[in-house]
Amino acid sequence: MVPDFLIQIKDFISQPWPWWVAGPMIALIMFILLFFGKEFGISANLRIMCAADGAGEFSDFFKFDWQSQGWNLMVALGAMFGGYIASHYFLGSSDVAHVSAATVESLKKLGFTYEQGEVPLVPEFYSWDSLFTLRGLIIIVGGGFLVGFGARYAGGCTSGHAISGLSALQLPSLIAVVGFFIGGLIMTHLIFPILF
Image (cartoon, rainbow, N blue to C red):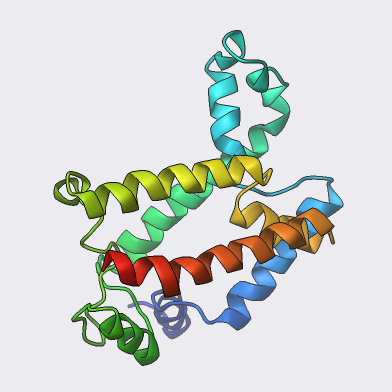
């Protein structure tokens, strides 16, 4: 017989967590990182992995002490394995995103025919079949290039600037985050309706 409090914990863990749980947890993690003089960012992990694999022989960009950044690789691995464990053992293996009714209505205005509880985690235009269409090429390859270029040009990704940089009160991160939002608004209201 399983104790009631363990059932309650599993029930709590098996549901999407509200902002008032996730928000303070992110703040606590950022406080710990700042306390130890570390900065969080996922895009830096690609540079670390390339440097660890010897890319410094081909480009000066990868010539740095990547071992001092090994902790950041653990963050990336933790995010990947934590997501896997959560989705397979706690949240179920649903391929449906939990979004609000307002989001479903916004998607319907863009031509998607989703109903509440039917919005897929990965949209149908992210597939191998879509990659070989003009729309898919623009979205997947063009979007991927712009994200990669933007992260390099801005000196960090959205998580690095919006979470780590803003919590450290860095002005360049504030400028980058404003740029991310402007780019997102342009994509959502101007480019996306043209593509769909």
